[in-house]
Amino acid sequence: MYIEMSKNKKKNKGNGRSLQVMTLCISTSLVLILLGLVVFSGLTAHNLSSYVKENLTVTVMFDDNVTNHEAAVVCRKLQAKPYVTHLSYITREEALKEQTKALGTDPSEFLGMNPFVPSAELNLKAGCANADSLKWIEKDIRQYRQVTEVNYQKDLMDSVNKNLQKVMLVMLILACLLTFISFSLINNMVRLGVYARRFSINTMKLVGASWAFIRKPFLSMALLEGLLAAIVADAILAGGVYALYGYEPEITEVVTWQVLAITGASVLLFGLIISTLCVYVSVNHYLRMPTRKLYKV
Image (cartoon, rainbow, N blue to C red; front, side, top):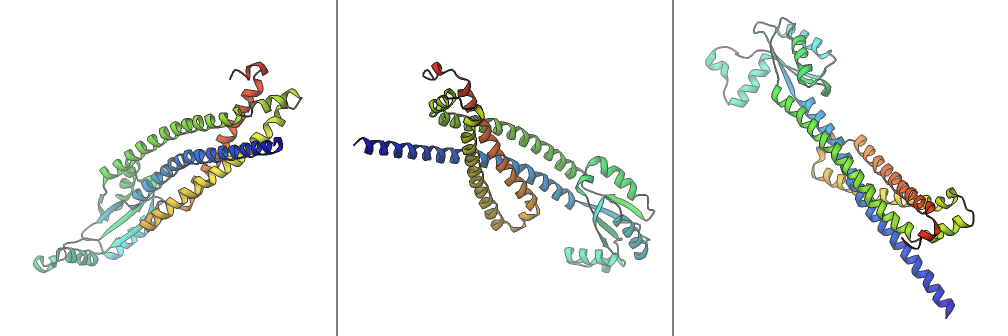
């Protein structure tokens, strides 16, 4: 009877420990998912801003008397500029064809001439698509005598830059808050687990075990729990990205493999560091505590 009760007690204790580990892993996973979403959102916001900036167009209009050859020479020089990522040259004939298709009628038929001039559309590097850079870029382009106008959507570029700054500030604040909250939540759950074994810790301390020896199994378990929680969180985040890709395949322009790699690594790192640090602090708390106080907490 005694042996049977002892076995049941050990079984219940093992089940309770397993349930505790499972609960801690699930709770940690939920926190890591939130942290992962913050990292993911911050990186994609930066990529989205770069994508928008690099797709903003600077239009260069050439003189009415310029020949296609002269315009093409200027375009080759502009293409070689360090701030240009892509350049499209539009001849008079191509401009007329585009406008005829858009208007549904040929303007040259009632004007008696082709009213359009050659032009070029430039896409800039993301780092150059801001108000300060565009001023000297416009000045640099206007040095060619064949160029008459340089047009770009200044308000849109300023808006993109301002919105990016706001988004990054919000993400930074949110990341700090979530890190603090996640540490507090995980720390409380870990302390409950260590609390249940406080007498075991004290017993090992009384028989002369070093603090490092006592901490070792707790830290090993914390690393394992953090790793499992991070894997679960990464799997859920990966599933969300896969679903997003199925809904919008062009999302790969913003959600690159670098974003996925950094997000996955950040979640893993957060999981290991937070779990280990919480256990380290909790175990040290009971190692410093005198034996007489263990019965009062």
